[in-house]
Image (cartoon, rainbow, N blue to C red; front, side):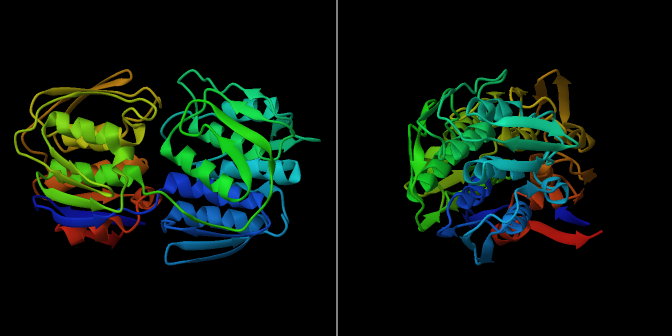
Length: 420
């Protein structure tokens, strides 16, 4: 099991190329199962989660080549309709094959998913949406058993207790491409990753409109076609490096990104005092010494993303004044707070709100990562802590960040990977 050893205090400077979006790549790989034609996907990040999804689609019958961030897929025939526990337990996004299998084969058997331990993330909305399309679903022995005689286009309501769901929107969208009649998904998630999946589906011969809004219309027909598609840049990786610039009071240029996807993060960085310079496909972030406190309210896109609150907690730990973060998406996503407190951070958790009183300096410590975004938050904290910080269980981080320590070293960070 690997760990990071970080010597704090180094200034960062230079350019960092942002990788493709993991949260687009995974559902698009699943969506490629819908066509029996050849698919070429570019800008696929080489991550543990991507390798897991490739393992799954190969199990289902896909012929796959993956090299230099390009994935070539061909699925002339689905050979199996089961997604086994040994694969799905590694990554929650494996459930995206449910919609694709139902569309193409009218049946599926998918293990209940795994992933980060950040609180309950039930698939109730997925099931409800697919049942609305005419699917019979039973959960038995840890598997979702789904089958249908035919899928029928309907109005699908994906309103949940905390808003709509990106995963459920995508799964219903995948299944609806092969339904009889039109499907209207409302309210639909409007995240950039949902738009990217819809753009891909349109390229392979489906007809989808309204993506990027809260109402998506899927025409119930799909004429399979071969396609080249380039995955959008990862807005969470870009946001993470933007925070790296702010927390180290450094200047970093983010290249190959889409600034319009980063509004919630960049606006908040500007609010606390960082300098932001945006152009077509790059952002220059400059942190300053005299930043000030802020309040963050996590919300669905285009609001402040839940996947960035851990990184901002690390940043606000060393920003003077009292800041708050209200987490509205997941119930147990402040797991990084305890580890940051071991570094001297002054953080109090009050239900779904974290109160952070900024201190001048964090102290190095031996830290344990609990999930993907918490792990990267601890690395950011280690960059500015006094002394040598150790972050263990970084396999979490490897699920979502491509060559992370190499990119940081190129910027001047003192960080090494060691095998425990």
